[in-house]
Image: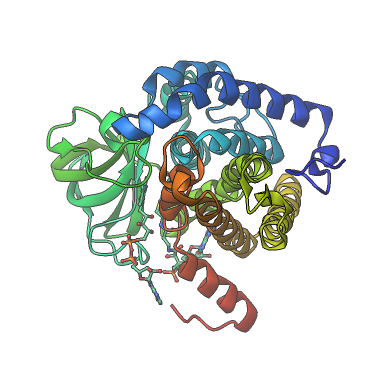
Length: 385
Ligand code: TGC
Ligand code: FAD
């Protein structure tokens, strides 16, 4: 029989090293994440106690060569995201932000001094980062940035606010994007700098096992040494998003697989009208639809990863996969919730938690509409934003 979670044997397309990465992260998720994650979600608790183990496995900044990072390829990073999100989107979010949104810009745009100062500690989980791009007045259009950095002598003074920032309240550093006289620039704002605060956003129904915060900058004085010297303009933050969105395309496959795996078991054991639920045609049709969508998503992400490793991946290709795969996972999680009947609202089963998380995942890193319009622009050459 074929593996119901991998009907086209995408695992067979992986190298031995990639399979080893998947297996070790998979074991970590089975043994360390799954036993605690529902409780974390209910208690609105980010499992910070796992950060050291995540770091010891080499999962932070895993694509970076040197600086105590693992130097793995893009497909391996995708598999890391897939396995982590099989546990919970919040755990994958933590790794995405640390790796793609904080370590990546320091590595790609930072000075050698900044890289030496931050990357090894971030790889070891000793320093946690957050990424401040979205502002309260509208995240989809970051070009309309109100947070402002003004040069004063040898320093910069930052004023403004950011909203919905993953890891904010637990972060030691923030990659803060701010408008300057020379366009958008990136700054490393450090915890404890006067005028910088990061209160947690409470009362979320989604990503409850993740920290989400506001950020406030009230005349924060940041030394020139904390300016990312090698990038100017919106392409700075957008190229970080390309890295993180790529990982998300893989991550959400894990969430969908977790839901489908549970539903196959459940529908086989639940008896209604004198036969297992799984013996009815409409239930089989719905399960088959899920397997079809997961298979397509797996092939999409795998090819995207091979393109990325070959240095050929384009941002609009990432948009297509982010749109397709998030929509796929959210639809599957919601449909699995429905097929569980009343049990679908219970914490005993994973689909409701994944569905609630995926409501954020389909929104952050560019909403579905933003990615659709990106494809529209690619096809027509006309900007419809
Ligand atoms: P546009 O004119 O298209 O581009 C400006 C410059 O940027 C370049 N560029 C990109 N570079 C790398 N990667 C990409 N994806 C890029 N997209 C564009 C572009 O070539 C240009 O460069 P240059 O040299 O010509 O100046 O800019 P636009 O203002 O038209 O905006 C386009 C749009 C709407 C697609 C963009 O603003 C966008 O993506 N909006 C969505 C914002 C978003 O995704 N925010 C996410 C915030 S972070 C987050 O959600 C983290 S969640 C983390 C977690 O917990 O996992
Ligand atoms: P808006 O931009 O106000 O959009 C509202 C609606 O309008 C959406 O449906 C959108 O698709 C639609 N829309 C927008 N433009 C158009 C258009 N031209 N045509 C048609 N429809 C349009 N941001 C960070 O910077 N760092 C983080 O770490 C981070 N983490 C997050 C964690 C969570 C849990 C969440 C929920 C968000 C996070 N975000 C983060 C913010 C996220 O990226 C934004 O929420 C997202 O980009 C959308 O911005 P917005 O919420 O302001 O919605």
